[in-house]
Length: 546
Figure (cartoon, rainbow, N blue to C red):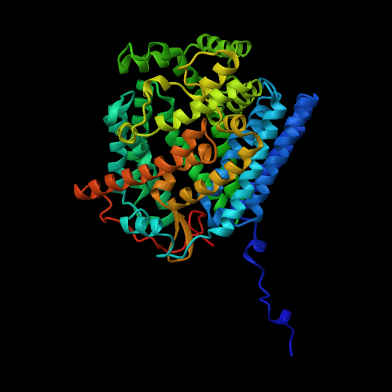
């Protein structure tokens, strides 16, 4: 009788046959993480900097190993990407960004060791929560799952929108931006809620990667995409809104990164060369894009007082004046001597993507709180939860609260309690510092519970198709940046909770309504109302077998 071992499949497992694109990227990030740590030793040998760099290195390695050693990216892609994003936007991004500019990691931080230790602690809690969540809630089979998931499937959330629907959504988003920017009231809120659809046309290349030529033709689409991107950038300059300009490009880049991390395709020398060239191009573009972002900050002083055309001219005027840009950067550096500052990176684009400085400010502020300050923060936190609710609901509940009295951020309030800073500046805060100030070590339990709820909500935006593959819905694709940056953290507790419990359902509803409108008006350039959600398997990383 033969032994069980003799009946084992002699063929090697797929992961043993080749180095996949996803594993190659993770190994590359690990190597960069190690090189940055070694560089920090040469940059600043102080105990504070070495301890900070060591904490970030250890925390980042833990996340990267979690992605490599578990199937989390394949089974729960969006929630896993949110965990990864928290690490990048608070720790790894800071280490790599500061090292790239040959700057000490601890430079311009108030309490670097405490900040990175707390961030690493919350990162560990998120990993523990995600591990338990994956065990409790594996992705259901196609046509199965929870009641909310079955309802969303019936409503068509998991269907593939045609190119016509995506173009319709893109222009709806643009119109919403023009009509809703800076406007208050119900109409303004609805318009602002629709802005996330602006970059829907740029899902077309992503669907082409997944579905191939059966979906559309890239040759036909790319001129329109190029024109549309230019139009969005122009409108962003006219409104002096960097967020609108950045969101689309960052969303596309992050979605491509997620796809590459999930890819099981063997890495090739040609692809590595292409990635290297792309990296060099992006590095070359970083300087002019950074200058453009600074020019928009300088031109902001005339926003609201000049026409849109004049605003564009003002921006390019300052863009061509290096002395004005240098003066603005110097003003930001000098702000470090004041009571409040946000200066950490030399590159303003990095400052938009990595939020280490905001957490550091907030952790420092709460470390100075007295008991009375904590009590005031508790009362204001409760009030802000009420303020986050729609006005009609507040009135129906009989809550006596004036929303206009709370036109400030938690970042403002933490600074105000600690150092008497003014309210109304909309400074970025930290829900982690806010939670620690309110509950101390007990906030760890609350944070894990919130993470579990958030993971469940996030993963409603992905589904398993009939081929056994976990894929992303269109709403999930459009939400990639927000989930990456604010999936399991935010600038305040009420912003995180409302973002999870209100914004995700709101985006789903608005997406389905606009998609229905597109089909009703016959704006179906792709020819069909939807594409079946079980196309042929493609080893692109966006549809990956579990």
